[in-house]
Structure formats: C-alpha cells, structure tokens
Length: 209
Length: 209
Length: 209
Image (cartoon, rainbow over all chains, first blue to last red; front, side, top):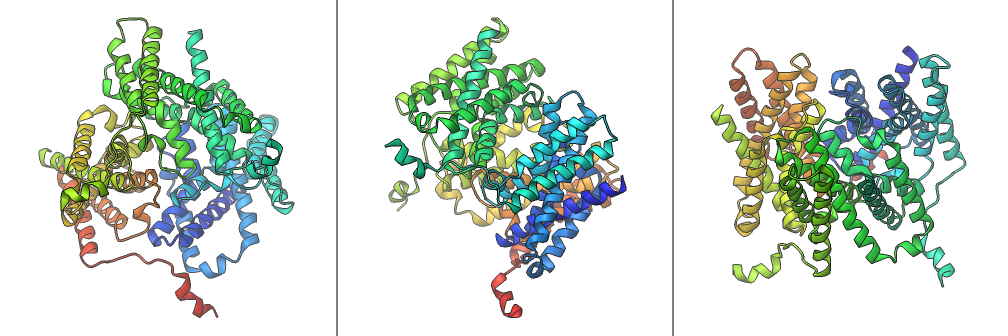
C-alpha cells in the first residue's frame, strides 16, 4: 500500500495548494490561508466520515494528514509568486487528487457498507469533490464543481469502475483502476475543453417568441 | 402509510424543483443544477440524521429518494420555460413539502428520543427548512428562510402540534395533523402577506434624535 | 463548577449578541436574527459534538443553552440602538466566550479521547471559533476569523495550555487556565492591534520586476 499512500499525500498537497491559492487571492491572513488549505485537503474525507459514522474522522486521528496539508499551505504562502504560475502542474496534481480521493472514499465506504452501491458511489464523489466545495463556500464563491467542466462526472465514473471491479481483483488494484479512470476522464475533459451544458436563457428566448 | 409516502415524494419534488430553478438562475451547469436539486430535496433530512446519530442517513440508504429528486431536477432542466411560470403551483407544493418534511423529521426524532420535546421540535424544523438553507448557501445567497415571510414559524407550530397530539392518536394521523397545520399556516401567511418584522435602522433614527 | 457555568452562559450571550447584530445589519427578519444568534452561540459545540460522535449534541439535549441564547437574541433586537454602541464591552465578552468555548471544547474531547492531543486541540479550536464561522457563512461573509486579528491563535494556545496542564491540577482549574490564557492573548492582540500577515500582491510586484 506504499504507492497508494504517496498518491494520497500528492492529493492532499494538490488540494491544499488550491485552497491556499484561493485564500491568498481573497486576502485572508496566514491563519485563514492555512485553514482554507486544510479544509480543502481534508474536508471531503471529514464529511464522508461523518456520513458513514466513522467518528472521530480520520483527519483528526492521523495527524500526519494535517501536517502534510499544513506544509503545503505554508510553502504556497512562501513561494506564492512561483506556484501561481504552475498552472499545468496544478491541473495534473489536482486530477490525481480527485482520483485518489474518489478511490479512498469508495474503498472506505465499501469496507463498512459493501452491499450499498449507491452509498459507495456517493461517498467516492463526496470525498472527491467535498474539499473543493468547502473551499468555495468558505471563500464566498459558488462551488466551482457546480459551474464548470467535467469534474464531478470523472469522480462518479471512477467510483462506478471501482464498484464494478471490486472483488474481482485485489483491493489495492481496484483503487488504482478507480484513480486511473477518474484521472483520465478529468484530463481528457481539460484537454478537449469538454463542458457540461449550462442553461442560457437569452439564446432560448427567440424560440419562445 | 401509502398516502404519507406520496406526500413525501411530492415534498421531495417541490424542494428539488426550487433547488433546480435556483441553480439554473445562477447559471450552474447540468451537474450543478442536479446537485442543488438533490441538496434541497434531501439536505434537511441528512442534517437531521447526522444530528440524531442515524448514520448513514436515509438519503444514502434508500436510493428511491435520490432518484425521485434526480427526476425532478432533470425535468426542471428540460421544461424550465414552463415550470418557472408555475408560481402558484410551486408555492402550494412547497408548502406541502414544508409540512411533510416537518412531520417526517418530528416523527423520526420521536421514534429515537421520545422524551425530549425540544429535540423533536428542532428536528422537525431542521428537516423542514434545512434543504432550503443548504440551497441558498450553495448558491451564495443569505438563506431565504432568514429573510422573508412566515416560513419557519409554520414548521415550528406544526412540530409543536405533532408533539401535543402524539400518543393520543395513531402515528400516521399525528403526522397528518402536523402536515396540515404547517401547510395551513404557510398558505395563510402567503395569501395575507404576513411577514416577520425586520429591523429598519433608518425609520428608527428620528426616534433616536 | 458553578463559576465555569456562569462563564459558559456569558460566552453564549456574547456569541449570540454578535450573531444577532450581524443578522440585524443584514436586514434579516426576527426569526433570521434569532437563528443567526443561536447558530453563533451553539454552532461550534454542535459541530464538535458531531465530530466526536456525541449525538444528539448537547445543544439539543440541554434546552437551557438554547433559552439563554434565545434571550440574548431577543434582547439584542429590543435594545439594538444601545447594544451596538457597547463596542468595548462586546470585545471583552467575546474574548471571554472564546476562552470558555475553547476550555469546554478541549475538556469535552479530553473526556472521550484523552490520548489524542491533536484531536483535543482541534476540538478546542473548533468549539471556540465554529459558531463565528457559521454566523459569517449564513450571512454571506468570508469568515471573520480567517481575515483579521489574532483570534484563532489565542484559542490554539489556550487549548495547548489546557493539554499541558491537564492531570497536574484539577479539571476545573485546567479549564480556568485555558480560559485565562485564551482571553489574555486575545485582549493583548486587540489592545496592541497585533495582526497576522496578509499576502499583499501589489507590494510584492516591484520585487518581481
């Protein structure tokens, strides 16, 4: 399970950096930036653990997760001028994070409620996107995941692939499949600029008249 | 319990449509509209279940609730031009939803903590208004229920009537009383435009001088 | 434990008044003002209880807490013109509230998970600042605690002092130490206008060129 742990830390770092960048842009102080960083890194998992009754959530019992996120936040603060230009690296790391959080969320739910596919899918999705939703609410934005790009759908398909393959291969391998599927869909959507439809009232008005 | 289930689905649909309409107005994409729809339909019950320790929440163990809400969201997207004009139907359905959510919330809390009236009242209210509060937070609005009209008070009086009558009649009948009381107060408030007072600083200033 | 209870009520009142003032400024109706008041008073404790699995949260099982908060909200509404001028009294009461909430949060976590210092520290902080964060999210503001002044750090150092001293003195005395340390740091920060750094992009630009 060593490699999957490395991916988890990469996911925490990518999410944390995105939270810290949002905080700096909103002119939060250093404490606020770190809070937003940690909430983005660990918030999805905390909400998942509450929903499946795993209390206290892992984020409070394994301080390593917090420390990795804290480090990511502080380094973002220090190297802000450099990090904010690393757009492509950020997108790739973020896609890895989405994949690994989806895999961990699905796997955690499976370990407790293996018979309930809907719950497992939901927990994969909530773990995947929950941190970003919290980041946006704390920084007074409509959650990004509700507005743009194929982001959540990558997590949903990834979690579905995990459920499909679970039991047929080893647990770790199923998680890698989930991570890979989520990552691939997300990156393909970015490259080809695939977006979900948005209802445009104005363009529809002529039809109405 | 067949009829009460029909009311529950009507409540989920009414809440879901209000969430989907809010999402379309905020120019969310289809995924965001569906998310807002589901959060409005099921969010109050999820928060209630977390607070009373019923995990995973019913919304994750009974996928029918989700599917009804999903259907409401998709149909709102497709028939947006028509649905957004059905103001009166929406207000009546929403009042039914408020009533049935209050009844279900009170009854769920009663089944676990029958001795604690304050908790039962709170859970009735939170189930009744929680989804709308989540909808407004996700769409970057101050919760509507904090700003306008006799909405929450209908839920509080409805829950109180449920507590008062509980044990004297059948459980189902007590829920119908709660539903009816909540619905009636809400509709009367809409018809007569009864509002709670808002503190108007400017009109008070002359008094102060 | 009589005196600590008095402090708890003072904390609930101070937090409730700050919530009610925020609600009145945002032109919420009376119900909204009371909701914001109660959420600010009791929200931090509710989130803490959810995270440590203490359900239903104390705020729903001990109605006294709610009634004290409700009273504070109603009195703020009635005496708004006078209360909004009591700036210094509000700052002192708020600092007492931060201290006592941190002490209660740390102590509650200690009673369940005495071996996990990180969890205890987190619960002290979340109980201390959680209500204010909820108040700001409900009133569509970026949480104040993320933006200005040494507020959270006072709570963190206070919780750390509680953990350090716990077991060496009586529980009540350890809570008083936590309360005093938090209060003192907060008040000193206000008097000397100590702030956490904020990243100022513009002042850095010359360095970049």
